[in-house]
Length: 183
Image (tube, rainbow, N blue to C red; front, side, top):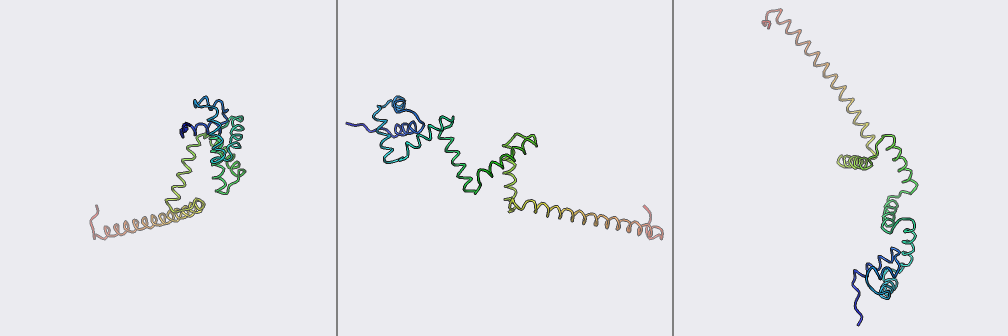
């Protein structure tokens, strides 16, 4: 009677295969026969992962370059995100070069701090219902408003000072004419 191979063992065999581990080592690591390893791989190759041999070759090439499938998958996810944003690799490389120069010039090597600041700017713009692209114009507009308010304040301060002088003259006149007693 043929025993059913547990799912976990199948997963370990597939992982081993994709990581470039030899059939003999997969069998030894999982304490199963060489035939079981071959059987699992054949079943997967014909019904589940048709390109398992191609994936294995990619994994072996990555392994030779001191990488693994996890790093490769992360790179592919990142590449897909960039494609979805419509950004080319050249554009991202140029951005990263500018970022490197920025960190060098500002003597700040804390990329995490920079990203937190970037998130903060985004949140502020979002809370103000403002596009990040409109921030420079909005700042210029607000600076204009500040200048106008400072001018209004200056004019009001001058008017207040003028009224103080008028009140002082009226008081002095009232004191001189005897209408009120001096303090």
